Amino acid sequence: MIVVCPSCFKKNNLPEDIAVSEAQCGQCDHDLWSSQPIALNDDNFMLYVPNTELPVLVDFWAEWCGPCKAMAPTFERLAGEYQNVQFAKVDTEAAPKLSQFFQIRSIPSLILFKQTTQLARSAGAMNAGQMQAWLNAQLN
Ligand SMILES: [Zn+2]
Image (cartoon, rainbow, N blue to C red; front, side, top):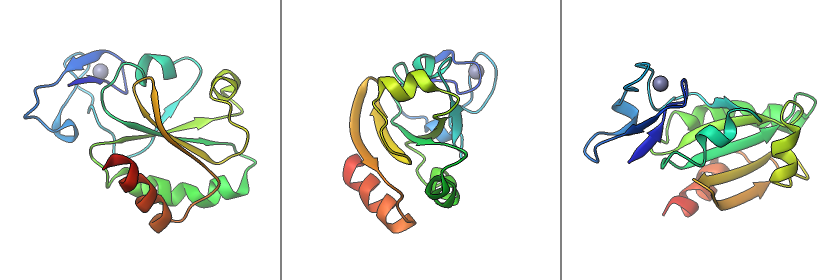
C-alpha cells in the first residue's frame, strides 16, 4: 500500500503485512498514521489525499463556526480509534481554494476520500454515535 507521510509528504510503499499505525516514514521517520487529525490546506492537500491509499476523513471547519467547535472533540477522539483511516481537518477560511473546489456550502462538512474518489459526504454536526455509524457504513 502506498502511504503518504503526513509530515514530509513523501510516498512510502508499505508491505501489506505491516499496519499503517505501526509504520514510520522511510524518509523522515515520522509516524505514517497520526492518532490526531492532521491539518491540511491549499498547499499540502493535493500532495497528500490523492496520493495516499489510506482513506482520509476530512472535516471542513472554521474558527467562527459553533457547531464545528462542538464537534471537534468527538472528531479528535474517533481519529484515534480508526487506525485504517487518517482523520484530517481543513480550515475553510485558510483554504478557500479547497472549499471552492469541493463545493463546501455548509460547515461542518465531512468528506471521506479514497485518493481522488469522494466515498461519502455529510454536512452538519454529528455526535459520536452518528459519526461512527456513518463512517462504519462507508467503510464496510
Ligand atoms: Zn516523512
